[in-house]
Length: 345
Ligand SMILES: *Cc1c(COP(=O)(O)O)cnc(C)c1O
Image (tube, helix red, strand yellow):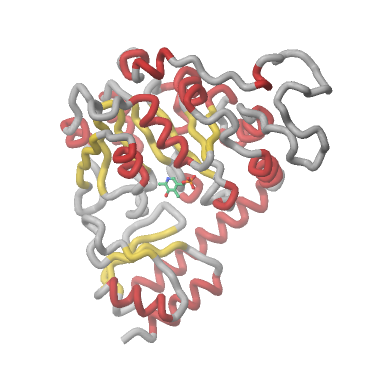
């Protein structure tokens, strides 16, 4: 990797971050807080939250096997994605490279930040070529985005291929592992120490069952985490979210049981889909959803909507003609979907 200073926007490198009231007394024990203009009457939320979410990070660290100092927490992984653009990419000058199709937020954030977004199409098996990705890069390429397991295709990429990119590319590689709990592959977050330019994304929204609290994670070198913390809003993760996440982490056995059930249901549903006359192909999946090529995705989509069943119509996405993306639901929801599809004419 290039020196970090060469990759970071000069204004961000030089930035003196906002210093919140709670930062300044660090190291002292205190019980009278007259520093932040809060209302002193206790109601559970009258105090500002911990800006660096230290207690929550200490709970996440052993679960994810990532040291506390290598963890960033944000308002969904979407905050981390946006921050990566704001830290590294000069608007109107720098560019990023990504596989296509993939998660839509990378391109939206690129557009918002006025950063050129270069797409490199996957092959017919939804696999990518490290050479093609690297060939799309130039001196102004700051970031490569890889999502594995990929959304909307569902497949995980071979680790060696991702590592090939990590070894060859001189900039930042974002590896979005939002669905890694549903995959049998060893996650790259366990190897952040090996790759100074890697940023791995995880989220509480999928396997952790907490899409509503908006909590995303990024794992990277301490230096990169420091830059993200410098640019984020001071109190980016609210107190209710921090508390609820702590509670969820108390019962990992329950979470693991739900993940296993989703994976069992995935197998059943994929099997049943492949037997439907209106389904032409089910793509291999390492996620809690799968992509299916149908005879007429848009008609089937509308038919399902009329019956109160919502799936994701991906048929306008490149390489996904006539494809529906199906999230694995509860057994009884999956059964409703199947029986509706069996009656489709
Ligand atoms: C769902 C998803 C996320 C999660 O985003 P949050 O903002 O944490 O809810 C991130 N990346 C991918 C690829 C996803 O599909």
